Image 1 (cartoon, rainbow, N blue to C red):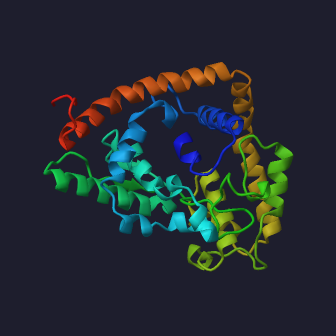
Image 2: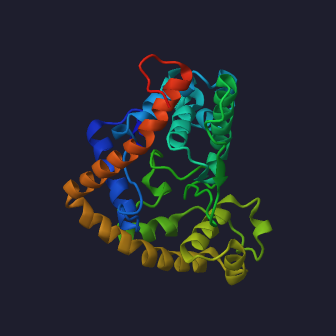
Image 3: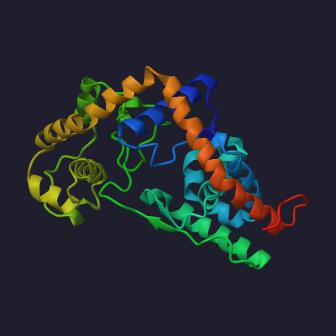
Length: 296
């Protein structure tokens, strides 16, 4: 998502490195580019072109309600980029450029999906067409929103200044163990029921991570560790995280030694994605009335 990344300043070298690392991590985690299309946004012009058209469909009132902008801009709202403010219209383009009907997202993106529906509905209504589908969110798994290891009320993010707030795929075994050991907790034993986690954000976050890595439900993890101390739980979480993440890290490091291969995956994926998105963009241009657009 390199177009999204530059809503806040990125050094060119870091942006290139991060793009390749994210790609390598997805490949290492098992994404098969022969059956899944893997590409970076900036190589498919339909994303940015459609985002502008959606800027002309979306309303200021809709964007003003977006809580993520308020959280990310904070007190420096007047200094935030227009891109950061209009981020949700680009997200809508990411989805609707392919006529997607269902989108797997984290719980924190549900509001953005509602905006995508508003944009699609407004476009269809304005031009008297039934063109864009009204997308549905797919919120799956136990860890629907992974939070910071240092603050259970803040989302885990690579943009967070403290590296201790997150686990990176390229972290060493020692770093992963240290970060889990130092993760913020409370002073109470682990609960036996998920409902008891509602006022314990740090506990809820760590249990959610454990559930996701172990393919168990949150309820099953609570039953397994009911009454145990966080010392015991963190030891088990560390062992689990190392078992699940170490093979991905090793494969990712191998891939980053051959970035030509990673870049070729992105290039091939971009060609496939462009072939899918370009006809949809032409149809949108025709619906709007742009001269030179192809008739459908």
